[in-house]
Image (cartoon, rainbow, N blue to C red; front, side, top):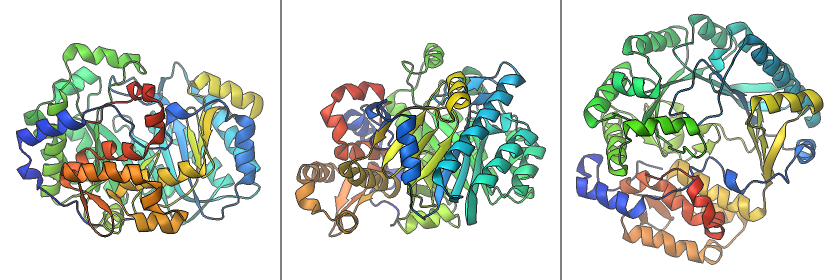
Length: 468
């Protein structure tokens, strides 16, 4: 795998931007899963999950995710499952339930499962005290066994993350921290209710490096109120000077029908699709010029980072935790709204913290819905995930792994891919289809070609954010 071919970022004109937006701006999934969540049903319940766990005999190491829903306050752009805790008793009760869920799930495996990856997300995992967080980590380590070299990472809000948090995480073998920044412009921060200055960010990064974290990642969001190319450029310049190991630059997902608090942002005005794409291209240009490798839909990594190496080797993977270098066919997840991902099924916990806790207290599991994977689901999932991670469709790989004749099985899809070739979004060679530079900005649209559920049920389209 190499950097996508085609026009350089510097050569993308305003006319190119308008054409991309006019042709490809629609609603579509982000494809952290396939089939996507609107297709899941309550036919997958706690009993089905027990069946999945008992039947999982794959000896390969798994990934593990823990959801900590608590935040100090709600940021107005946030589409995650978060909860502003009213008191410490709520937190303690949640952590007790979380530990019981771990015990229940681990017991159903029958052995102490090996882990290739452990990740904490939220919410804000460092909303917990260092002692509370260590208690959860210790409980996981008592029931799962991390293999040598397993990745341990955690999402943090740098505003509430102390040196004591970082010291404890290093003692427990965590190598990566990912800090949500979003934007450094004061006017943008005030609108979205997330104020944090450059000095505080620099102190956080320096502390993490001093303590020996191998990876410091920073998350940004474009498409927020008051963002301009000038203000965005100042934020990008500050990040380039700090030089984190990885950067994630997400497009703001405005879904007020799902997250009503996002409606508050509409009074400030949101950037148009053309403006959003211009901000995305500006970020790509800045980070690539600064020596970062552009990876997947929205990530950047320094050339010696293991994700950059994996991308060049065509081995980047994608799951609910985002892009990863650890290949794991199964992911077990704990906490409210957590999604477990097995070759045979997706299993989704209850969203609401209160419901999750009560179900765990009464039965040990808190499943609300999911999806049983068919052979066709698994086939199409592999293609979509590789497209999203490595920007290519290689028929020979698919044929070798799934025993299908690609040309016969995907005749209609091939016609669509070739149409993207004609439009300059893909190029085709004797190996398959590869995204051009323009294609990397609309890779979700390309992936939608293989989504048979979108074609079968157009009503789901309105549930998704815009692809540009």
